[in-house]
Length: 462
Ligand SMILES: Cc1ncc(COP(=O)(O)O)c(C=O)c1O
Image (tube, rainbow, N blue to C red):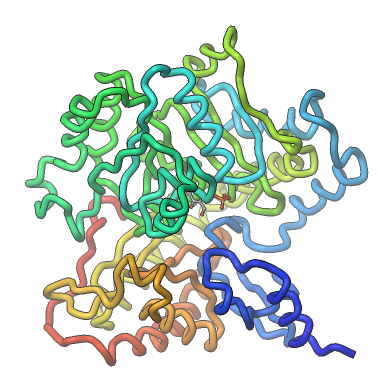
């Protein structure tokens, strides 16, 4: 009889591991159970899930109401082609509309964030013909297919680009990254140059159809813009007739506090994409929401888009249940209290550990940026290290935390602290104790400077 370890090896031998050199896809952990904010390995060992998996299990694991809704739909009508309507999709649209602004009134359902962004790009480019360029930013991730990878500023784009698997027509704008300002300025004296530069950029480029942004940058840093940033961006886009696309695939569904991040600045995009939290990740769902104006274009024009699994009933069935669970959880007041506790705990850790250069975030969406030297802000690792396979300091910290019972997602320069919305203050304290141990791995290699950690999004994290 094969051992579990043999079965895992056999699986890795016959499958591609995502975003990795395949020789590194050898001994992944086998997860056999999950409940609340915990996942469990095949030995029954619990791990606090402090990244909500891929910042998607917003309601935690094994939510009964969502599971029941899926089971009911599986028994009634698991699949029907998208040329028909189905009751699950009808209810999902109604649930999404209950948290969307009126102006975003038309939806396309797919099964991932990548696809939600693909649909957004087609809508934008087709409705803005002959303008075709899309502006993105360097600190961004928008997906894995040719269009969404082309918009992606992070190093995952590079190999796709070399393989000519990205589309043409994307331009990158400077980031809104106060800790490492691309203009070497400081807020508020900077006059939000990163937003104002877009006016020049769009005018000089010509043929710009759209700009796509994560309203709070996710994997690439939990970069929360200052309050003026998006009102300025919206004004510039309007001036030039450029569509503004908000990729709310990570920021949506109460991750940053409100249902969607646009609410922080009351700046409504022309197109909004969501996935992950839309079903709290109980089923694969991607949604592209279009303004009535964008949608209106297609009344007489051919909408050249669709999938076999568009409006998939089983996928859609999780959405209304998840939305009502979000509303219940948010109404309890627990997430608001917990996010304040999380912020205070991370600030305390940053004060204590010299490897933390910057602590920033909002809601349940936080970053610890890890540096070798707080004064020079020299990082341990850079973008290219993610692709070259060089060991990452953030990876070492995350591995130590995992040994101690805490799962968190590590990017090449920062740790992603984004627990489910149901996390309690006690669970945060437990995670803090583990992080306190794990961060020592990097502290031992830091050049001591006596400079305190930066809190670059203090203006947002009230
Ligand atoms: C901001 C953002 N956009 C798009 C995607 C792609 O979503 P998916 O992995 O569901 O294709 C992700 C995934 O992490 C993301 O974080």
